[in-house]
Image (cartoon, rainbow, N blue to C red; front, side):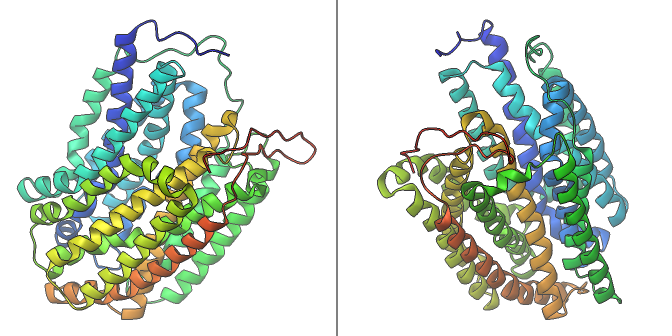
Amino acid sequence: MTDPPESENPHRSRRAVAVAAATQMMVVLDTAVLSIALPRMAADLSIGTGSLPWVMNAYALPFAGCLLLGGRIADLIGPVATLRIGLAVFAAASLGAGLAPSFGVLLVCRAFQGLGGALLSPASLVLLTRSTSPGTERDRAIAVWSVTAAIGASASALFGGLLTQTLGWRWVLLINVVIAPLLAVAGRGALPRRHPDEQRPRGLDVPGAVLFMIAFAALDLAATVDGGGGQAVRSAVACGVAAAALVALVAAERRSRHPLLPLHLLRSPRVAYTNASAVMLLAGNATTGYYTTLYAQDVCGLAPLTTALWLLPGTVIGVLTSRNVPRLVLAFGERNCRTAGPVLVALAQLGLAACVYERVPFPALIPLLVVMSVGGSIAVITLTASATRSLPSHQAGLAGGLITASGQSGGSIGLAALTGAAAALTTTAGAASAAGRADAVVQQTAVALPLGFVLTLAATYLTRRIPLGAATSVTPVGAVATAETPDRRS
């Protein structure tokens, strides 16, 4: 079949693409920008080093747990309504977090921010695809959407450092209260309506999403150390809750007519190995940016803006690498690039751990951060490419949502598990003074990054296990499986 004609209203289409890209940039920016403000936030709200990762996890858990559900909601009620609801929730939660008088209030508001982000991210992609015609127009729109997100990730450190140093850490959150209404106004008249003949999903797997979040929240709680008494009992109870939630999730997904995660997909080696690689890679690399920021400010004494400027070369080179990954794949092969990415990340992690342990000046870390950024860009892009080809084209949306949820889940669990293990093994979770916090950062980094190195090596092994060849449609037992033509790009 030939592609349908270009959009009847190009101006409306371009405006919708701009709204979708700007929405994704806001979500990506908020996910990363807060890390630069963590030291100031911890000092202002008296947050211990063992509890500080929960500022990030409180957002990441509902975000990862509701991504697939958010995509299904966008299909059910349309991207227009989903974006409006998501923007309202995100703005209200950002206002509450920016004005939070205590650590507990901050965590609750961050969780609602994650829920809003889980609605906005998939809805922006649905909006983009429904506003453009298949073919060249849509390819260009997706490129704009992806590059905008990459620019947002690259600018997050600089933006966060500037706001934190000039207006204070609260404005890193309050700025969303300004941006969200602007996006809502800009989207008026630009958002497409659902076509009358468009097929709607038949239901939502709300129990699956709830069980998914309970399982990962319990795993995070089991791994997080706060220095208080009864830690072993809390961890054991949390592990039991996580195990029970996972068992209930499997049972619920098997019975559900519209499962959030169709379990039969995991029978495909390409689906299983690709998503397992993403979980291990993001889990292993979760603490690098976290401890790098703390080292720069708590140990080296750098200001937030100065820290952001030193981090900028790595992020810029990472974006430039992303643009050239297709050329690298053509030159060296996808499997070799897919392996080289995690290897570069693992080697950089060991180097960073050694440098932090010796308390070297922060500029000496820049080459290692550049290597890690290059390796991470190669690894993420090749894994994403593998994920989109892990299922036939009519299941590409499910494949994309699954790889995104895998990465987000791996990152949130990895951050909690590695920071918790580092705090437990170094007995520094309760450090509050400046000197104590500096010692805690150094000792915990020397534990967390080598553990991350092990997980990254596991990701390297799993990437080598991803099979080459055709993308097969995996269906439940008794149904007919279909296969596409062999993928020669592998």
